Amino acid sequence: MSIASYLLIALLGVTPILAIANGAFAQPAVALVAAIMLAMAARGPAAEFSSIGQLLKRFSLAILLPAVWMVVQIFPLPSPSIANPIWSATSIALNEPSLPGRISIDPGSTLRSLFIYLIDVSLAVSAVIITKDRHRAETILFVLCAVTTFMSVEVLFSRLDLLAGMYPDTGAAASPFPAAAALAIFANGALIARAIERHLHQQDIRNLASLPLWLGVLSGLSGIAVAFAALATLARGSLLAVTGLGLTVVVFIAAVRRLGFRSWPSAILFAVFATMAGAMAVPHLQSGSSDLLGFVSVAPEAAVPAERMLADAPWLGNGVGTFGLTSRAYQAPGATPLPVSPSTAVSIAIEWGRPAIVILAGFAAQLFFSTFRGAVRRGRDFFFASAAAASVLVVLCESFLDTSLSSSSVQIIVAVMVGLGLAQSAGRTSSPQSYDKMTSRDASAVDRE
Image 1 (cartoon, one colour):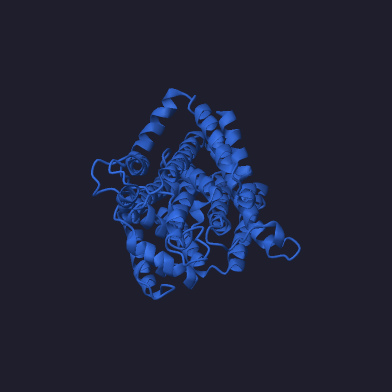
Image 2 (image 1 turned 60 degrees about the horizontal axis):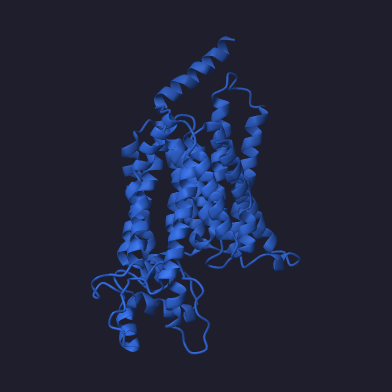
């Protein structure tokens, strides 16, 4: 298990480099590390894997369905009516009636997307296994804080004329840096909560000169300040608003824990508030479009092809990973094809099919409410699940704003944060009332001394 945790730390450590380089070597290297890590992590005690298996069993459909759908898109279909129309046109053009039809217009690209998806799943599962132990979970949290904060610093460095040429466009739609800055806020927020919780559970809780307390609080506040500065320089108002929604989740969880609400009523109450906020945000879309492009700020030369692709996309999609190939058919002569989709949601509608947006959003909601419930029910280690719940919500909302999820760096960070939150969402539970009694009992003991 120690080897697996070291590999996870090393993988997180090179994430800022991957964000800059983004070379072709990244995916094979990440795949190799993920495979070794999962194999080493799976060698733990059988009793520990029993609880992990029960935890992951709830998400079996969410894990398996995307992989199964990509396999269905790749394989030949018996009915031409289900296959993409391009295959029947190709069959006629080549005079080959026996040419099999598929949903994907490029099975090779869809197969590569399936490979990347399996890497992300293995990273998340490895993170769940590794961070089931509290001490390893704290170590991974420290690394996440350092990595995401450093990527936020890279955004600030990229604004300097002296260093501008060293970094890619940090404000691009597919750039990992805005998402990393948003996630840095929640990771550092968890670091602050950890420092406060550890201080409240020690014997002398009135000793405000505690070095671990102020070291954790000041480190977390510094990381949050750097992350907010990075988001401000990127001028991403929508992402700032979404990040504020994530912070609302963190504050809401802390409040309901203190007030003694139960987990499911708290989740329902937050869902009502979130629905009201979403209803107020819909009229303020960034364009007049009522479709998915209304959430993004995109140039007209890119918006027109994207709108046409959305309108022409089959109900079952064109195949995962085929956006670049599809965009070539919608470009004006001599124009540069769109390298990436305006947003992850747009690419899902075109590649996976429009129903996939609702299905995948439902899986994200399941993950959010699971970590939310775990944070409300958990004892003093609630901040792991709280940060994961906020991160899931922000990543879900950001998928409508840009394509940062296509970056391997963001995929690694999100997979680890989700795995960390899931691992620590189950365990010791503590009601807020019992927590208050324990804190009062500790304070009384200090008074008697």
